[in-house]
Image 1: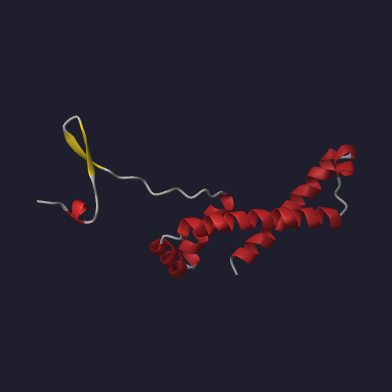
Image 2: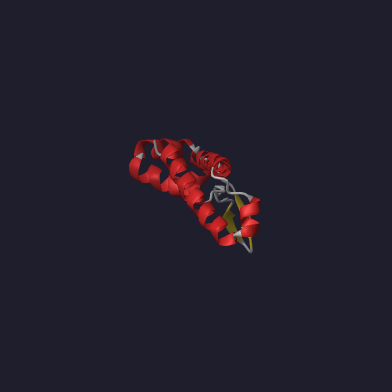
Length: 120
């Protein structure tokens, strides 16, 4: 007599006289803040897309790609904005607090632009 688990291709191994199912956890996506934030957006604002990605097994890959693209876009925007606004290493050496203020402002604006691109 076989179990449903065996009928669907499941196997067991023996440990201390007990049959233990051979199970593995699904691969955890390697996502950071952008991926988690985008996942929340998918769950709340784009439920159909979220469900399609989840059931097709493509959600993790989609979140990892979104994370990678968002990081690259933010870094590129920050570099461009810093160059346009004259925020240089020389400013960092001469007036570190001003440099930090400028870079925080640039990062904030760049992240807002990236988020707008992700959610439209």
